[in-house]
View 1: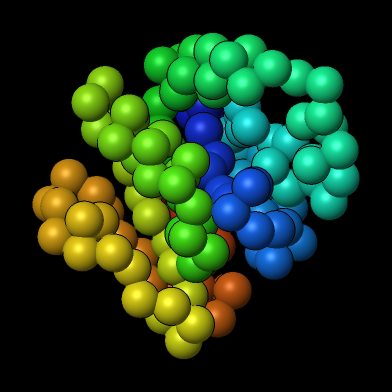
View 2: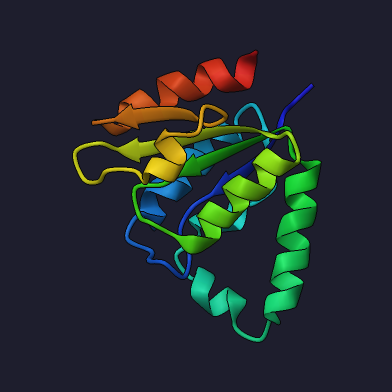
Length: 137
């Protein structure tokens, strides 16, 4: 049975990694259902226009509760992604955090929490090797 993945990546915190998000999402879609596939869209900020923040919150938390695993790309700091990680932890959802160790250092609130499984990487290819292990078990 295909896993349901909640992919978390920065939206309002910055879209510098949107192309990376898209590639990761497309890779995961080969074997899994990505509930938040829109995170990889370059026009995501335009898609949000006209939506009430409360509606976005309701939809995202519903997707989180439905998911089997949260995969977060956290190289670009985001308050929303931090909240999603805490929400997933509170609901017992497995959390895997990826970040480019050549560009950033994660918050101690993430690295110091043994609940989160942290995957530092220095090349994009490393992400896909780890995802294979997460999504096929």
